[in-house]
Image (cartoon, rainbow, N blue to C red; front, top):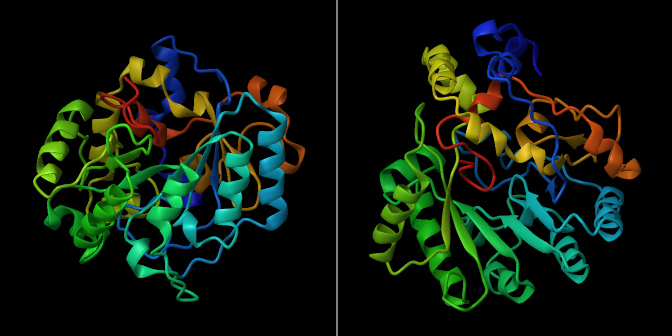
Length: 333
């Protein structure tokens, strides 16, 4: 964790203390998802991005690490899902090979697809990404796409001018190849996160609103995941510059929900960085808080040792345990 963030930690926002005072213990339950952050390169540079992804980032998983991740899947049938994220993961040179090989191993593959990359293309080499909807459908991948809101103003304010309009057209193209259509088996879930320092409304309520409003545009999707803005990196910087950091942390702490804490994603997931290191979640990865298993990487992956580890928690974990909870799969309670 950067020193400036460590210095700002306070006893009032100590997550471990919050667990102890409530008699909670959160050991790992399983590893059923391997989440890979294969690149920080992105065609966008969103204000809330906890990865600090942008067209200027160059980090990418090596071919050796990609092979090691696939070997983990091959030798651990209990890990049923490969969750691929970034940046824009489609911009990684081996993205399509990774998906094809994981599908050949019989794994469910989820791709964190930002929609606009279909039109923006590769920011470094100009390669078109217009084939993605049909390619996703052919591979049977589950698409997870962030759409901050169903109105242009809020989405464009958070993700950049014109993002809403591109996202709508990208969704339309995904629908055209079967995503979101009844009985197609092709799943697209949308992700909502608040535009500012407040908690999302109830996931079921927002999903109803999204379905109604996007339906007016002829768009369909399967489910909506609500995610609380994590007080790290760009969003934390925004909070600090606007003098709202302490108030936001107080808000998360006041909304601490033991039921949401019981369902945090780090109890069932391992996150892998582009250099093959292991973390309890993507947020810990971005804060450089490695899983408490020494220097284990994908090259010496040990499932049993990982199951014996103690999950690393810090103040940002209040973001996953406030209200209805928050995870890469949406609310947890």
